[in-house]
Image 1 (tube, helix red, strand yellow):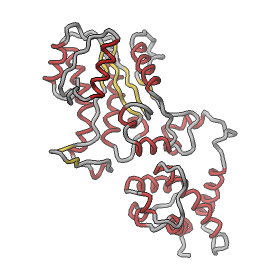
Image 2 (cartoon, rainbow, N blue to C red):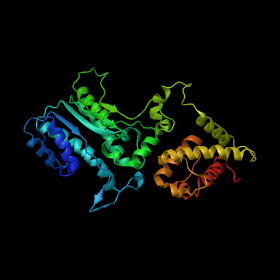
Image 3 (cartoon, rainbow, N blue to C red):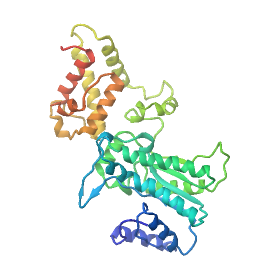
Image 4 (cartoon, rainbow, N blue to C red):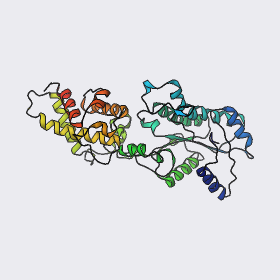
Amino acid sequence: MSRSSFEDEKSKKVAADIAATGAKIILITGDVTKMGDVDRLFDCSPVPVRGIVHGAMVLKYTRDVADIAKDKMYNSMTQNEFRAALSPKVQGAWNLHHACLNHGAKLDFFTLLSSICGVIGQKGQANYSAANSFLDAFATYRNSLGLPACSVDLGVVEDVGYVNNREALAKRLLAQGWAPINELHLRKILRLSILHQRIDFSDSRRSYQIITGIPVPLPKESPAQLDARFRMLRETVSSKAASLDDTSDNMSVLRTAFKAKPEGGANDQALLGILSVEVNDRITQSLGLSDGIDSDRPLADYGIDSLVAMEFGNWLRTELGVEIATLEVIAAKTLASLSKAILKKGLGTGR
C-alpha cells in the first residue's frame, strides 16, 4: 500500500519483479495514517495477513505544490512540520497494530523500517529522529505483549532508497563515518529480521532492534565520538589503537593552551596553525567535501548553512570549551578569520 499511485516506471518494474517470482501482488492506494485505509487493506487480502513490513516515511510537509519545510532546528519547526515526519511512522505503526488485533491477524513478523537517526540523531531532523526512536520502542512494546516485531535501523543504503537519490545527504553521512550497505545487504538484513522474530529466544538473548551502519571501532570523524551513549563502543578499542592519532595530539595541545591561557603571544602563531588545521578538517567533514577548504577563500562559497554552523559550534564547545554563536560562524569571511576569532576566545584575550 502506498499513498502514491503505482503507475511510474520504477513501481511497475518492482511489481513485475515480484510477480516474476510467482507471488501474487495486490497494489492498493491508501494512507497508512488513516485507519479506514488500513482496514481496507486487510479486507482486500484474499488470504490471512501473516507479515508486515512498515516502511512509511515523510521528511517534508507540503501545502499545495510548494515545499514549506526543509531540515531545520527543532525550535524553529511548526507543529505541522514536526507532525509531518512523525505521523506516517507513529500513527501508521499504531494503525497496523490495531488492525491486526481487530482482524485477528496472527503475524509471523512485523518488521519496522527505522533509521539510525533514531539512535544517533541527525541535525535538522528532530522530527524524523523522534519518529524512528518511537519505532524502536514500539518493537519492544509489541514483544512485551507476546507479539512479533523488530525494528531495522538503516543508515546509508548505496544503491536504492531515499539517501541513494540525494547525493549531498549521502556524502554528508559518509563523511561522518557511517558505514554504507547495498541492496544485497539490505535484503539479507530484512530476511534476518523476519527469521529472528520466529525464533524462540530466552528473554536474556532476545533483541528487538537491528542497528546498521555504525562501524566499530568508531572513526574519529563520527559524531558518536562526542556522545556519551556510545562510550562502550569507544572503550572496545584499547588505548593503543590507531584511533589515537596526530589529531588527538593537536587537540590536546589546544586544550592545554586554552585552559592555561598563557600571557604574551609568543606561541599564538603556532596555536593558530594547529587550530586552523582542526577547524578545516571539521568543516570539511561536515560538508562532505573531498578536498580541504582554502583558508583565504570566502566560506560562503562552500555553502555553510545554519545547521553546519550549529554542528560546528557544538563540536567546538565539547572539544575545546569555546563558545561561538552560529551567526559568527556563518558571518566569518574566511576560514583564517574564523580560526583567529576562535583562538582569541580560547585564550581569553584580545591579542
